[in-house]
Image (cartoon, rainbow, N blue to C red; front, side, top):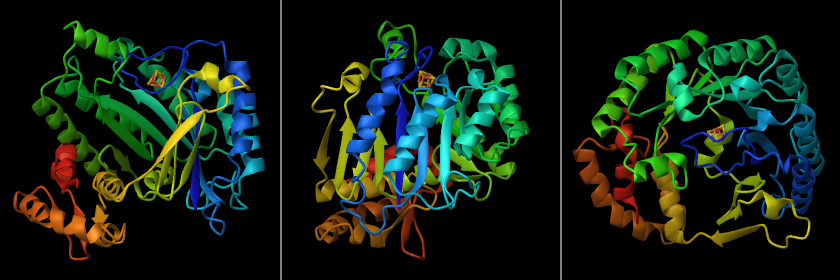
Length: 389
Ligand code: SF4
């Protein structure tokens, strides 16, 4: 079982906080698909080299950047090339069942028209992830988003009318002009739409962003952690009260609608990332394509990526870091089996586990898992760091 991530590194406008690799220039849009086709064909044996018997791609995720700035025909060329070069379940691209095949496309609300939504459906997408971020228009403007709240609601309805029954919406919290009351209004508005999945991210200051430059000049400061924690707790409470299950620090879903693709990252299932800045993982190996659209699109470029083999410590820490952010937590068995060295690591962290358990920051379950209680997920990063070997 495997997944493919396809990066579309274009946005019509850069948002103030965004650290993802994308460019606002339109200069390389026509050269991008031929470059992607080259990479796809070079990488066609990525999964079969290590897993010849189980190389079926069960999830495809087109993210960015903003995939929806490209026409559905252009996206379709990339999808065709992927279909020609990798193995998929026989019902892929015509099923709505994410257990058989999940195909997500990220979109921006202002790109969604009935014709575009229909064309994504015809491409075989069965899940949409849309960046709403806020229902407050002045906050959206401050973020540098292209859409307003009305466009987000309209786009959601258009997607539903086109037959998408698996839609994820994103929100952002934890910025100074957002009051607790406004945050709760955002939560009410998102629930009224009844999306199957909600992701909510606390704003951070990423390197090389306009927000970082504002912060360096003293013109922006993140709110105090207690303010953000209160927002996070209300997020958990409101969504739980509306029937959503929290399955990861930032992710909530109606029963059965967790993201299979993102869950496979956390379970360390092999995935191939295509496009500049995309990451790949297989076995004990991680790779990352260099960001840089110009180099990527140049057919004479020799090297577009580098990689590393993970050390036993890296693998152990990764299992902890990825697994403890999920509601399921980590099976001690998986830590034990991660490497012959793992018993040494486990003996090192057992006293830390006991200490964290006593403080109520970690729970050890009867079926041999360790997990962070939901009331402590807000401080999960610190807890996980304490466990690293
Ligand atoms: S639209 Fe998304 S990817 Fe593009 S700049 Fe904004 S947050 Fe980043």
